[in-house]
Length: 349
Length: 215
Image 1 (cartoon, chains in turn brown, purple):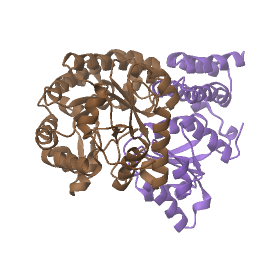
Image 2: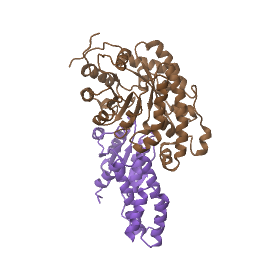
Image 3: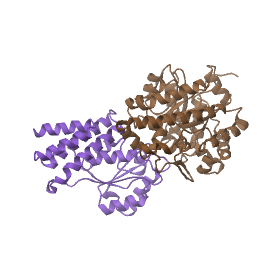
Image 4: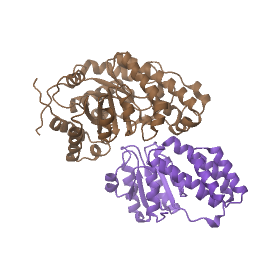
């Protein structure tokens, strides 16, 4: 196969995909996030707190890679932060939680349902304003945020939350309720800025919870968020990292338009999601993309493209998870080159 | 009679019935059953089953935690009555999450299952300085060094620990195990780790295997 430069802009391509029209090539959305800050010589910390740094990072990444979606994302804990959880910001790592605010049920009074300007939410809104102005004509923006389970687990500590699921399910549900309501307020603001909200649920992953627990603690709240986005007229992808072999069917049944997955057998994903949701995944950002070499990246992309080419309603090539600052940017170039070589469709403008 | 009691302990442990496990362990003492037998045939046998269920993806983090809580409560009852002459030298393990990373769920699962199978685990915690792995391993003359990380930004630390061991000429004194989200056999080969496993149960099995303790 021969390499071909893009014919459509990312915005035209995704628009055509969503409305069932022809595309020039398969969509490709490597999950570039705070590693983009390195391209403009800024730290991950600045990226998380300064909307201008955030916006300029994505502009640089879009210009270099020409990928099909900006994934605005800082860390897994910022919804919890807006609810009252303190985070630790270090120079070149995503912020994280050291002391979980909910040590016991009594601590519920220390948190609140986040409103749209709480915590560091505004960094996203201001970055979106800049992006809309500068590249809004060419590429869509999305904003990724931890879903109810991951947010509740951040507030409580994952192991405590896991124990509570047996010993104090009521506390789980209280935290999930407040998390869900906080996320709704954020989604509303994100959608107003024209961005696509994306739910991330690393803690609801099949690496941590059983499908039964998913039904009990994750699905009701995740599905509520999806319904809510739909009420607002927005599409809302669902991303779960880690193993998803046993829950990918449930993810597809959530009502989301796009199931974004990490470690899942492609045959299982195809079978379980067929006819229900677009699939997005799942080249490894910690193996092929991290270590290369070029041929290995190209092969991984090509195999995925070939395997998924007959999937309906459609497949988007992406990484299974966020691309870390350790991944050489050249390797993301190689991934884009792979889709511009092996993911081409017949197309005349 | 004894066997029935062990069976009940095992079953209740698997069912996460902490209070029942405690009750049954108390009964084992009343019946004069040696603590070692109750531990091996009841509690550890139960956790072996839990480990299997985890590997088969029937049990997940919450279930393993609840079962291990039940086991530990049972151990608290019978352990003071252990006759130390009965005890085989346990496999020694130094475990921790690599410097720069605070994700410790995976590491804790490995620790729980290793302890549950009778190993002596020295837990260095999370965000562990690389030299600490080397120093602790030497200090306690460990059998295994087990390193975990969830982040690809910190995984290089694992290779550096192995280099440090080599520099000191003590690499071959230990078996080095690695695991965690971004870790693969490819990476293990690349840095010269002895064993990579995909999950905690497999880590326990491999640990017994390399130490020649396969039952």
